Length: 185
Image (cartoon, rainbow, N blue to C red; front, side):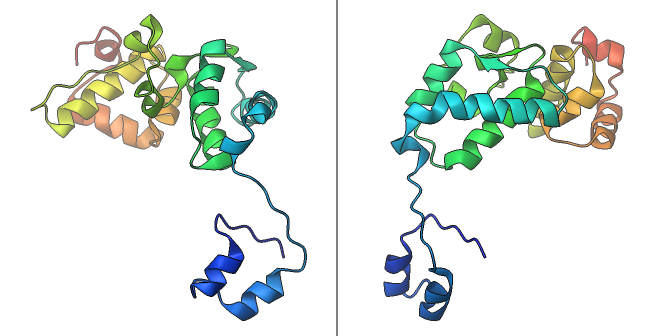
């Protein structure tokens, strides 16, 4: 049995959060893995490895990240550790058209860290206060379709919804693919 925790097991036992007998049953051989934030010097190699995995998994060509993306990764605290890095790179790989992951391919959460470029403006949707959730969703879907040259399968992947859901949303909005392409929804 291989088990992992983000807590100190001895502390969890002392606080009653981990059963004593379970701890002793699992604690045959203990390997301490420091959090990603404590060994950021490994990020370039981890990014390269995970990007290759994600590119194979999603049949994409993404092979590297820009210096700006790597700098952002180096400055980020990674509270979700390697899982968060993996998910970030998976999303970026799906969103990436070419071989290089750019800031615009990262989650909007990274945008709040000061990443800004013309490409990210072109691939963003601004929604004002008072805009309905339905209208914001419509704008996001149409902008995503535009950024994928109306590739519905790719847009659905980026949005994290099924292709059927995307079709239903477009039908609900009364938007044809042609209307989505020219921004008229």
